[in-house]
Amino acid sequence: MKTIVGLWIDHRKAVIVVVSDKGEKTKVIESKVERQQGRFDGVRSLAPYEAQMVPADDSRESKFTGQLHGFYDQIISVIRDADSILLFGPGEAKGELKNRLERDKLGAHIEAVETEDAMTDRQIAAKVREYFQRKKG
Image (cartoon, rainbow, N blue to C red):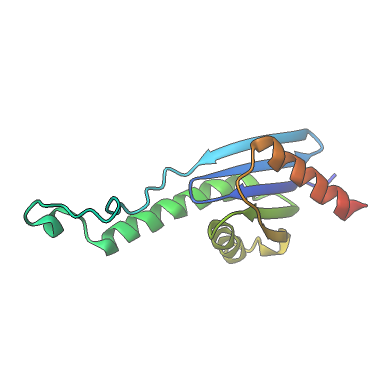
């Protein structure tokens, strides 16, 4: 049997379902990515020199991008040996991961990229099974 992988992803976590001869295994990877902090409800600080106390946007964005690369590296290490990959999730992360997989010469293994809202781990596993059952049948 081929190794198939279904992967639900957003910038906070990835739920990876691997189905192979050995059975089905689910792995969750938390990203630990910190998004830029914003002001709360448009409230402005009254502290003097506030702009000097807040890190520059480009350094925060660079830190965010670096953390995402580490997150994607962890995911790729788990799914590298997959024969078929289904990517799905609610936001931009699935497209970003698809681009990384293509850059790492794994793009040919991607079966589909779909948009899905928040799902439980059990719903994710069921979706992966159903998707690949339909493909087989």
